[in-house]
Image (cartoon, rainbow, N blue to C red; front, side, top):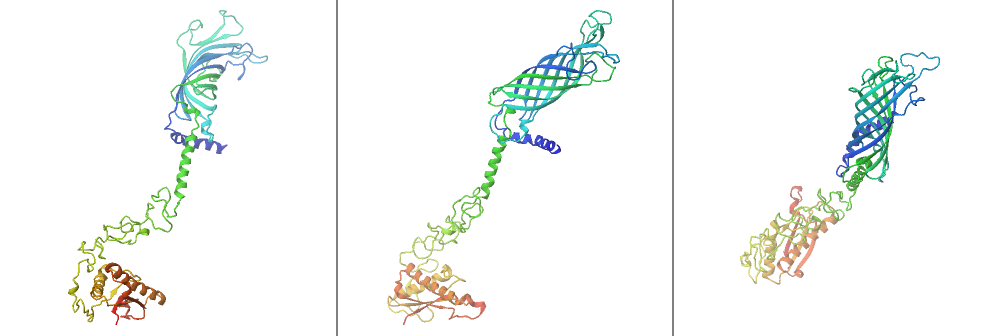
Amino acid sequence: MKKGLLFILIMALVAPAAMSQSAKKRYNGWTLGLHGEHLLFHGDIRQYDWWPAKGERANFGGGLTVGYQINHVFGVNLNLLYGGLSGIKRVRIGQDAGPNADVRFDATIIDYTINGTFNIVNLIYSDRTKDRWFSAYLTGGIGFVSFWSLKTDLNKEEGEAGWFEGSSGYTDAGTQKKEPTTETVIPAGLGLKFRLTKKLHLHLETTFRFTASEKIDATEGNTGVNDHYSTVGLGLTYTFGKNDDSKEWVNPFEALNKNMEDIQANIDGLSQDGDSDGVSDLFDKEDATPADVSVDGSGRALDSDSDGVPDYLDAEPFSTKGARVDENGKELDSDSDGVVDSQDIEPNTEAGALVNFQGKAIDINEIEGATTNNINVSGGALHSIYFKVNSSRIDYWSSYDKLAEVAKILKADASIKMNVTGHADKTGTEDYNNKLADNRAQEAIDHLVKIYGIDAGRFTKTSSGETDPLSSSDEALNVNRRVDFSVQQ
């Protein structure tokens, strides 16, 4: 029981939030209703509490209701009820007559209240999305009841002496109405609604109406029992508005279910990573990145040099910032002199010209001790080139000018052939160092062939690995990572 009450309380608190999920859709809210009632009095002049006594007249009434449905659960209405109340009390055999023996009363009442309604069905979670035809609700409120009451003796005819017992809202003789007596009334009850059409509804409602008065039966101060009355009635309600549905007939959790589905889809999206790059598909701006490619926070493949070519496709992933590159990410060399445009101080060198590491043309006749037909390579004219740790890449700044010197010698005398020997330092295994030294020698040959057009057949490649170091000191291992050139005898 406690759990059930707790559930209802929680749902009542969270329901408005659920209702707001469907606020974007418009629903009809205003209603106008007519109702007829059977009324039953509960007070001093009453033979039985819940059924009529013999000779007691039936009491009926009718009224008008104007309502507004605030949301799918809560509504409010103004209710007007006009009707009659009556009761009799006969002395039973062996019973003390008392002050209210063999009497009856008849009253006319006008009941006007403001009531709240609480839709029970819309509080119960359901995944049904079909239109409902049935609803149940609780109602309660506060208002006033105005009445004219007349109490008479059951055993005497009207006008006979002693016939008049008392009144409320009449003159003493009960022959003329005056201002009605008005008291506070608090209605509470429950109802059932049936949907006849989208705008016309039938309702069955019962209420118990509490008052703080003893005057409805024109009897006051005898027993101290307050007078109350109950109603059972049928009515028709019409919903106004141009929209298709009324708030009270729509399952408020339908919109919430839809939102939950959307949320679940987003959660699923957060956990899905179609290209397995570590960025969920929901945020991935490149959702088809190849496997094992490094990406940034948005799922885009890394482009370290910002040249527009992702690293995994970039032949030169560390190009000079702002340099122009081709589709493979290699810096452009407009004059094909072997020096990229970003480093070339003479970007329009003539084809086939010898240049230094800055792309500046070199006059072959400037080589000391060299002539066109007689090349003197003694005295250290052939310099070694050096490499970074674990690399066979030729460095622009430290190697291009030295390779240009080698190219000038080879171009000056077509009969000269060169020995190209690669070296490595002692770090790493012997097999690895032999291979690395061989790669360095090959890179030097490829450079001379590609940039200067030297015939590859004029080179002999060898690898000394780590066996021919210039330095055995750990502080000077860099001089062992080199390629040497020598003229074949």
